[in-house]
Length: 411
Image (tube, rainbow, N blue to C red):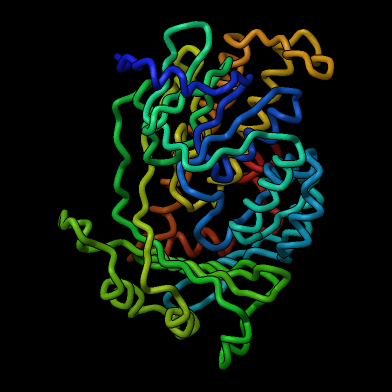
């Protein structure tokens, strides 16, 4: 990819060189910053927004990610600010009947780490504080337009001409990543589904007696599903409604609005319909992913998180896989290093080897997660005879049957 020449004033605005520049200050970017700083590298994060922060509501952190947060010393605070639910219960969205459940206490015993639910902004704040404690250089208002990877290092250039040079650049700029273009000309894939969310204080939920406040409850139905679980020590209830948009199916440019929300859940059971008024109706999230790509590395530029493998939400693994990426890259750096640097010295890393090993260890696994998430979406949302067969299969499942999640959580 050809890069524009910088004029002399832009060159004069160049910043001091570091080991790693990370583009994007979301959960994935901060997780990478923390992991690499803990590995002894000098790290800078460039965030285009004027402040660091996250939007959205709840996150589910499965054992494959909570195990890493424990290794980083963050799990006690994550648990303190979140909730350890007792189980996941899956119900039919039309009649409310229980289909199957997952005992999360047994899950913790089996995989050696807990299943935690937490507000997205709380996890982001925990990671941001940890990065500050590790002396990560955190920069806001820095919208990166391109990366120069023509030499043995890499340099980011922002819209206003700021230039940052590092041994590597990590692209953590999300689903709409501009830096992914170095490796692929693909575009996000429209799933035709839209998500509505709402994190509501329990005191605002009068008349909702019987809510399960110690578990993750999932209702699956034809072309839609609904999930709720507690947040912030049980003080809030997180709710997510997802449905297939008829307007998206017809190719209309504006789709997923509140008019479609009510129609999508009109046939669901009363327990679901009672929850719908508490959803945020002034915003919604159209759901996209991308086709997996096998190569995430272009010389000294490497993709991570949603920039590398955006996935649909059905496995609740988006943040978990970004955390795995961060741990995987730091592990690859360790393996490709000549020991840790002494205080004040540069750490010697065989970067080409480290990035190759990271790519090899992560691309195949995340491609499987992406594909499996798509499958589960189809499985959840089927109708007619397929729904009858699906419900029978789920009802017959033994509570401790882990054959379909061992590959994901035991990592």
